Image (cartoon, rainbow, N blue to C red; front, side, top):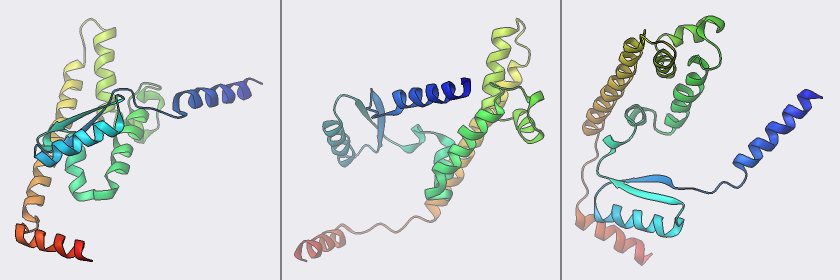
Length: 183
């Protein structure tokens, strides 16, 4: 009977949390500071209503570094890669549910350097131990992940600059628009 009640409880909890979601101060960013970006941001705000907070950021460096760096190379697969790296592996390696001593070898090994584990173990050392033993090493691990993100963004930026398409002349754009309208 208990497993059945647990299943029903989880089903109702998920239904209550995820059925017909509506934004509640959901922050969305439009990248760019051109007039077109501002018009897009205002149009989105007008259509979305009060539940969405639209902001504009001048460059893409203001967003998650590792995701930006990987997007240049992974394109459509970036979301799957980020979910795998930072959701699936963070949950299983962080030690929040089970410590590395109770995990299999793969996840136990990832626990020693993975960003979720660095965060959880760093907080654990601050909260439970007066000497903050191990906090410095965990903080260093988080800065290493930040450095990896910066390196990925630099490499991606250089790759994009090297492979950037030639700019299109304004006259060619106007001619193409005129032909599209005429059809």
